[in-house]
Length: 261
Image: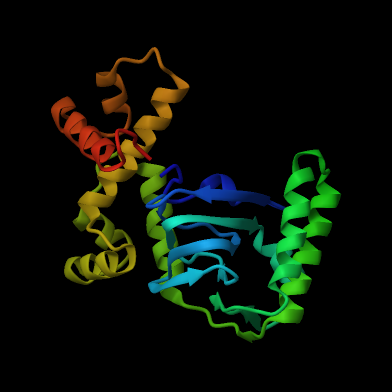
């Protein structure tokens, strides 16, 4: 599971990311959030999705839309294949009619093969395409989605904004002391309400999430600076105790077949 929790790098002006994912059974993307919009097109197999708490298994020929600031996670059920497009929200606004939004889950459609053909032909030349060609592809693809699928009224959910703010804060301050009391006070909630909100939205408690965030960043640091001793890495990601760090690292590595995120 390679994705981080709050994907800061995604939130840049005119950002466009397009990729094909071939997934083995159980391959997962942990719960994360960003301010860009994301589309998934399932071209083979079954794929579990959790988008803003709406959980569903999507099948071959189905698609999904993640609006900005909605937490989401994925898991392959058996072998599967999908295409993902992540775009700056400003690009999305230039395509989608004002006040409208794509549906979160989009079922089978008679025109899906046409969309699939565009995805397949584009991915083959994606690396050689300049920024103008890539932007043109995005407009063409989203134009097809607008033509072939129904849109819905745009609804702003404040919980999505709060979740994004919380995860962004943790990702920016993971190496500092973070407690439930401190976060609940910062975001203006009682301790119990904040705890319930976090657990329901993020699907794990704060301690578990913070550990995963720190270990995720520890892995990143170890890859960037392989000469650093582990005790130094543990301090850089906010652990006072090397023993605690190593236990957390070993636990999450074991969960992922010997690999961390």
